[in-house]
Length: 69
Image (cartoon, rainbow, N blue to C red; front, side):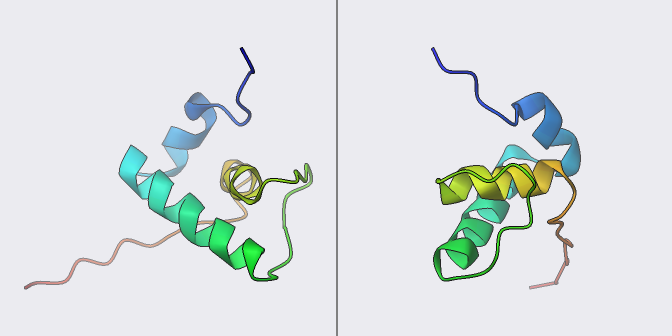
């Protein structure tokens, strides 16, 4: 079994939920896929892994905006 890096223990304190982590990583992976440079020191050939590394290294953050319906 492969060890996943970064681990969930490293990633979950960076976001408010697992769902936020998935959306954040997916959006960043799409940006990398379309040519945005990778900001992580440990670069992988997989865009999602690069996105997760950036989140773990605090190079990618998010801001939750609450809007009333």
